[in-house]
Image (cartoon, rainbow, N blue to C red; front, side, top):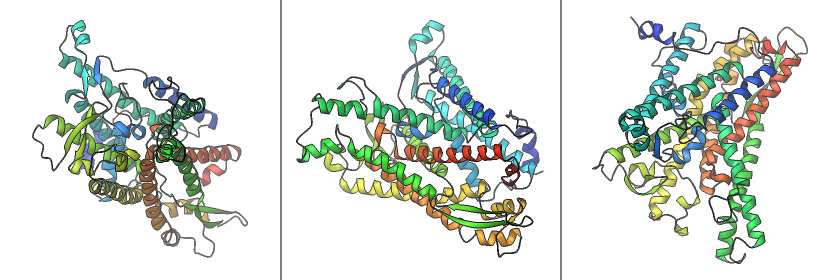
Length: 492
């Protein structure tokens, strides 16, 4: 008996959001999307009952893993992304033996397996958070309930696990009944919130984080001191200090570059086989796989750093070759040497500009870390982009079949999926690799230069690209509402 026959009774019985039986009107899709977004913001403000001292173990990765520190959405989209990484690696190696393109039974098994993996990953993520000392139960609350801190820890774990399941099903609701994807929507929500705070937050000059515009108001009124503009100190204050001009320039540059890259494309002409004069174009964009594979790369880095912190907290004699931890940031020791240091991404200009005095690491160690981060992101971005294209039916074969089913063909070529696939193979694989590597390079450069609101470069990159894609999808939905026959062409 194959593993599919053994696992089918379990995988097909997992709770799932029912698919719509017919086309969902655009206004209703917007309603479901807005409703889930409001629920998401509400849940990020529901704290974990029984939580005492805590700090965000994900740190700078929080912008791409969504959720909120100290809330029941503590794990964010991390388990979903980690499950996707595992499935993409297994699928890429053809170890699952599932035909997710044409076999409905295998499609259901794949979705059930993904859901089961999310449940496992949520458990494996939440357990160390609570029982390895990263989220400490409140002794006072435990005493008031008349239970031990261990029992209170299990209550906290149950809340975090429930939050992970809510994230899973909210994502499924948007995927089936809304516009876009839940993962993308949650990233946009979190990053946009931090961006707005980065521009407008006002907590009193000198008290807490102050946004860009209030800070410049303080500079202009003399409440914030800056050195003479043409001196070394003045230029530092202007670009990296209170002025934060480099972060503003980087933020605007990322917006411009991503929007431009999304518009760069190779358009393959199409014509209808039976309707004379009916023509169209299939666009192969420079960022063909979108920037969503970058979530997988950064999530892999986040899991590596998460593992390093667990080992450092639980393994007193951990070899310095693996990780030399010293100092604290956000309540946790940060790697200053060893393997986990070199695998840690660059977060801000202070991480690599050693002449600023914000890091005590030797210049050669910093440059090696920058090189590892660039290699990891560029190569990882290209590899995961290829996996993403193949597992989301965007590859040459799946695309050729979609064009064939819509009744279209490439002018001058025989109407055959095999012929169309060979034409598409000239463009899609190459563009996928180039686009994935470019996105990885942009993410690292944005992190190195810094952004407004202390948003990571990857988070900003994802937000701009996902928002652009969401705009295109909304425009497509509106077009299909006005012209119902277009739905058949788009495979609705």
